[in-house]
Length: 75
Image 1 (tube, rainbow, N blue to C red):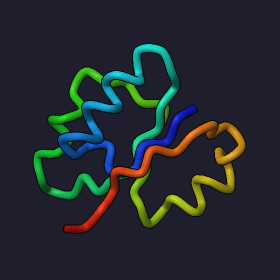
Image 2 (image 1 turned 90 degrees about the horizontal axis):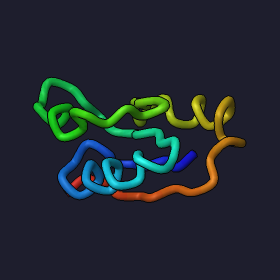
Image 3 (image 1 turned 45 degrees about the vertical axis):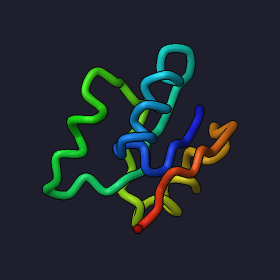
Image 4 (image 1 turned 30 degrees about the vertical axis):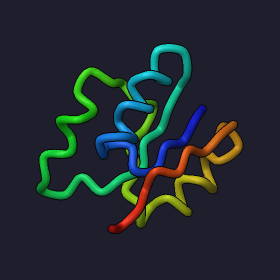
């Protein structure tokens, strides 16, 4: 599984779309009330993780993660 932080942003969602055709992916991002969810329409991630829950998620599923693509940032 590949974990993509910031996976609903413009660049992150394009990376997620490309990788999801051949890999299991998980997306970590804040969806909130913004329309960023629209960026991942058509992508079926293994999981969508709220950043505040990432440490807990990694405790359970972290062994399945083979790579992390970190696109998450607060500008």
